[in-house]
Length: 172
Image (cartoon, rainbow, N blue to C red; front, top):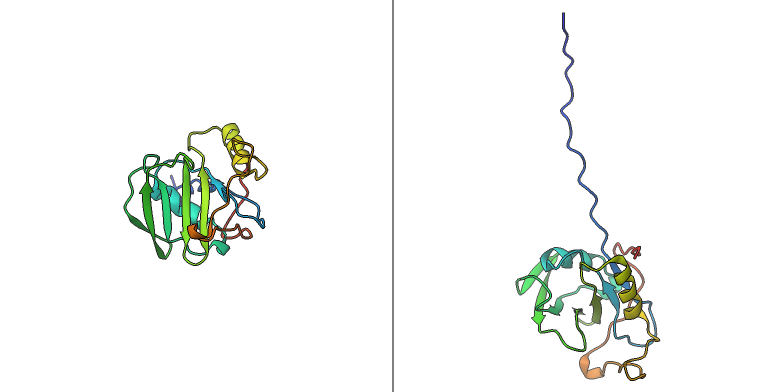
């Protein structure tokens, strides 16, 4: 006689863990900075990458309601998108020769933050070099002078607050 033992239905394996946001913010300082951080997205799909990056920002940066990106560097995206519980307006502008591959984040009443974007296909070594160069305040400009600081007309320049909202130090 053969007896069958009922088995529990097999459960599917858990999904792979979501990749960390590759975001490094500049240390908080008294002086304005040209670059407030470096972001290394996994792709040029703005609709996928932007919400993850915004969720990793410090709470001190407030709610980001406006984002300006290089129009040629990113995939097509609508003029606005819903992130978490709020609308974020997306502005696509031609790349500036002074700010190639940069993303600008705006938070009403709190400031503006500029992040250097590392190309998604960069190697870890290249990303580390680009990050170090972008976040080095002591690095002089091409003519040996410090880069100019933003004027009051340009609006308040953001400061990096304490780490918050899921920020993790990237390994690169």
